[in-house]
Length: 435
Ligand code: CMX
Image (tube, rainbow, N blue to C red):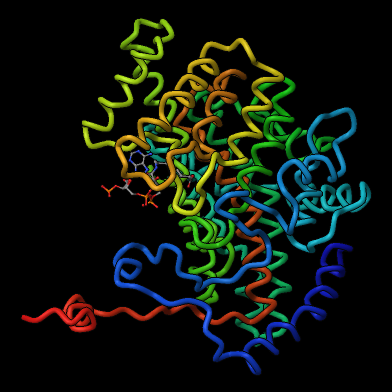
């Protein structure tokens, strides 16, 4: 058994009595009331999910296992000679709640390496998809195609006890996470680089190997590490995390759940916003004949988009009520590595003009930028200009958090998810509307 699995097993044993006690002794204690606008409005703000992997405060932003983004970047062991931490060490933190040592991170990296070979039939299937398939559809299809590999399904079918569900789920999660960089870079090279595939380098960590297989030079390895970490988790109510949890709650295996997660992430109101930001900014760029707009011109573009009934991609959030710290982390990276890049200056101009306009318009509850407003700029700068691919990068990162959640869901025996629906007529009656 790997050291990580052994450690996780101990953590799970220690944790289980806390959940049992809450259900048995305090199960009737009220957590939240629900209003009609919340029932119609996508359950916004209803406290009806639980996760210990991360917590999102509306004003502070995300904490992963209690650590802010700057703390994570500072405290996690770094890849030797690099600015950014091991993604593998970060996964150790998400899963166990403890900061890894350098050896712990290296051990997880070794575990991933043992599992990174992707079955050939996945590549054959990807090659046979229509060439104009969206990379997110290709990514999702590749993941669900591997469902036949599930260890959980095999053990479940041979009568595995409920307390042990987490163990083959852990194996499936590790097997899948190890393969995602390989699959994603294959899709990229197949679609945009004439199928000129670059083989994995067994010496490299996850971020380093991904940059290598994408065919992009340093410091893209650090960019990848930063991306995967920043996009990993945002508590469990967002569409991708919630979809992953929901699908897995039916005891569907990790392959089904993560493919579902990717499908939710592919919506323009969620992960696809990073593609939309670039599409939108490039559109403005073209209209300006390649010149950076003045503040006044930029304001007009923002108003025109709003008047056309569209949202400003990369702005607003269902929970956050301030600038997303994931946006700030990427902005700091830009200020350090690409301060004079025209696209960065341009995105900075959008950052300056958009919040007051959204405030003036008075609809969006949060006028500030989210993670997606800044992420495409960095990719573009390092040569990844095919913005259709950006959400795949988000997907690799998000899988780290969702897999961690699913393993713990199984460990703590969370049941199948099944909220109750009511009809419009019932709500009218509750509201006292006379017919
Ligand atoms: N531009 C224009 N209008 C916006 C807006 C934006 N960026 N953000 C919110 N609004 C509008 C909503 O469309 C809604 O309008 P209607 O009342 O006409 O339906 C109104 O303001 C109230 O919405 P809200 O309560 O502030 O926001 P929601 O919780 O409903 O939605 C989100 C949150 C992120 C979907 C929304 O802010 C949005 O569409 N943003 C742009 C897309 C985006 O950047 N998504 C990525 C989010 C991060 C991620 O998941 O990756």
